[in-house]
Length: 491
Image 1: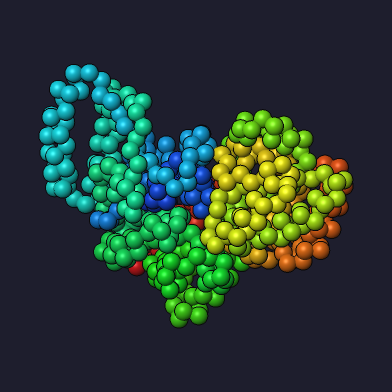
Image 2: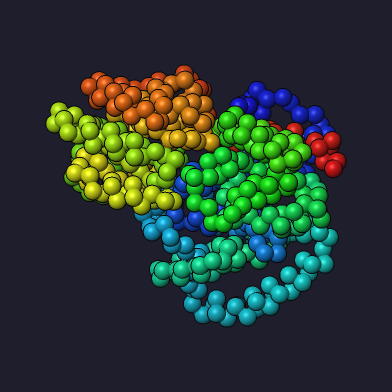
């Protein structure tokens, strides 16, 4: 993966630098908006972390946006900080995963705000009318200036309200349930960056229209081709759903970042099989650093917290779904726990996924469930970081992955890893893990028995060997700067 362009990357020529400055990065945060106050699964974490680091870069003209029925709309600066703030995400991770909440209500400070409200509404209507008279290429910049001015005024007139916010209405995009008054008018110099749940939040028809009308260029992130390669691993809402989504992504992307070489190869194979023309691809390794410090108090049960503090447990992290291959671990632990001298617990962190009710039922029925085998359906980043830090070793028996983010996070915490040798997982280990066939139960049993009898040890990756979110953002920024050269702007 490329290093930061300011340190070791190629120096851009003056024309390229001018193009990079003129090019706005319209970073779509629709997925983060939809998952506000919910546990951040891998894709949500990726969108948030890339946005957080790109927003902080002085060489990137970062504009946070969200998909809307009438195009794309700019997000309020305070809302963006709320979405991307790790402390906010960690503090609210224990909330129910099926609950979305609207932005916090505010209370007006006395009679002054009530008196000014009619004038504010009138001024808003006048300003919106005047904005429509401005040329489209300066309309957005003028709107952003007004947003900042509005935030200053609100800081004087409003304060947080203690009452809970109402739940969002189901079945409607989060961006359309939140006040986003500023419509963004893209130009041919702009880049729309899509790093979220493409099949859930992206209106590809709208993206196609913007691309055709404004010459907008689209850059996407591809996580895996599992729904195409292994449809039995996922829940399929209807025939052709994921297939059509991937075709839309290919047809409307000028550049696709793939999170591993394996994913890139799978995507290229799919493009060729679909009869589509080639699309430019780049490999982008995701960061390994969790945006939170370890905190044992995330484990609320004091007895369990005390037991885990001993460090005599194996950890696995990932949504409870078929491809994670949790039945293998349950089989092995059921065998090993029959030996009273086996002193290694199993901790699973991950929300329930598709078609695993039978596996979860079996998990709950195991004799050691709740004592020797623990399952945390939801866990804050600070809690996951503490579990990484304290575990004896980390396990990842997945049948197929587009990357394997938990593996890299475990290595970043210095923990030994035993992982599957399939998919992109070997890439994510960087040669620092024990690799096993995810269907070879005897091999996993032997490896776990040996690991349980070994003293606790720490894995020391070479300096700079593991990717970070800062490096990932730098690689994106450098590629997009090169992508924004005058030759690239000519369509």
